[in-house]
Image (cartoon, rainbow, N blue to C red; front, side, top):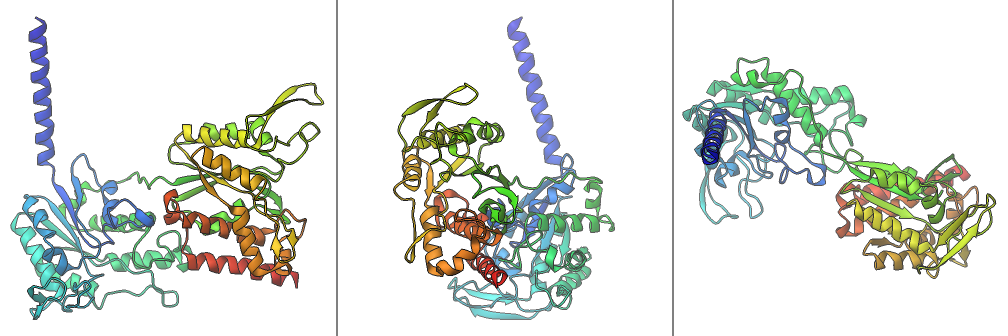
Amino acid sequence: MKNSIAILLCVSIFFIQCKEADSNSKKPTVYTVGDSTVKNGQGDGAAGLWGWGDFINQFLDTTKVKVKNHALGGTSSRTYIQKGLWKPVLDSLKKGDYVLLQFGHNDDGPINDDFRARGTIKGIGSESEEIDNMLTGKHEVVHTYGWYLSKIIKEAKSKGAIPVVMSPIPRNKWEGKKVPRNNDSYGLWAKQVAAREHVTFIDLNEQMAQKMETLGEDKIYGNLFYKKDHTHTSAKGAVLAASIITQELKKTNNSLKDFVLENPTIILPKKTNIYLIGDSTVANNGIPEAVGWGVELHKYLDTTRVNIINKARGGRSSRTFYNEKLWQAVYDTLQKGDFVLMQFGHNDGGHIDQPKYRGSIQGISDSTMVVTKNDSIKETVHTYGWYMATFINQAKEKGAIPIVFSHIPRNEWKGNSVERADKTYGLWAKQIAQKNNAAFIDLNDSISVAYEKIGAKKIKQFFPKDHTHTNADGASFNASIVVICLKADKSLGLRDLVLSQKEIDRLSQIALNTSIENKK
């Protein structure tokens, strides 16, 4: 009896699986082909860059249609075919499938060189040029942009598939308040080919340019595009392009419109969380004369991909940050892949057994001291290293990545040199990081070196309150050093989230100049 039931269950599962497989095989597939503005890199958002082909599935009913992104960065209409990228798509096509097609960004390159050799002849005519390809070493007949588009369209139609042609997305280049169109070049030629081949055309270039102009140039950067790249979109830019394509589809008689969702739920890539823990030199203290570098850090990071969660608190040492359960609150919310940037030391040198009861035992040993506070409560006090090790190892428990900083220098000089903490908390921070296999950044020395290049007179403008706390300009300058250090360490995995060195230098120079001008 048991064997019979088991056999029936196996048969039932087999038929269910067969039914599901049959259902999937009957689903039409939407293939996207194009360049890096359709699929950037591996389609994983490296450097924050995405193509619209990575998000168009979220606008379609994927219970009824499949989406496969076969675009490849760096290709033109010519090299997409030449490299054999079109053939596997063509071989997979079945009647009722769709091919979303967008080329043009790379077709304007040289027809023959030893670098990329990807250009096509301008226009949609039958002109051709015979070359001995300097890159491939092969004899080749090069055709017009329109010829290659037509080839893909005709071959797709021969398999019963339904092509949709897009004009290339606009580049983030402005002329006054206008985004230049390509409606007299590749956008026009894409439209003409679509009309000639009797397939759907979507003027993505024009529609997206209009949306960009509505937002205005200032709201584009760090939103739809980055300053570092005028061609490739952020995730939000890619989503905008995908939304335009699907909305424009709904205005056509193309059957793909039947699969467009009315109210799609768009999921953007998960942001990287960067937690900051430390004292007032990191924290938001609410006064302009004492601004921690953590307040200004956002200027130097790609905040479309990063959440900066500043949990630093003024007046805290590693001991009081632990005892007041400020660390516990961070620990409770940590997730795998988060970063924890920690900087303590300024207040750890305070009294251990007197109010404010924030001093920790010097060093990184396991030494302890029992202290009786005014309220008669006894506390076991540990070393600076013990508290730091606790933060490091508990962060690791949650799968987070701890990064230990030595504390920023005070505005204290000996001649032309800033006084270091390399024999005390700077040294102990380094030792405890190494002992617990955590990344260490010598912020104390790095900022000191930067200060010394500028000179004590100018640096003094950063410290209007005392020798420890900077104003906003000083905080911005210090934050620039933080990100330079983060960018320099390839192993940390944060360098792609940091602005270009040119932009960092520009912003830090603004901070320095502003502080000097304000003093005048």
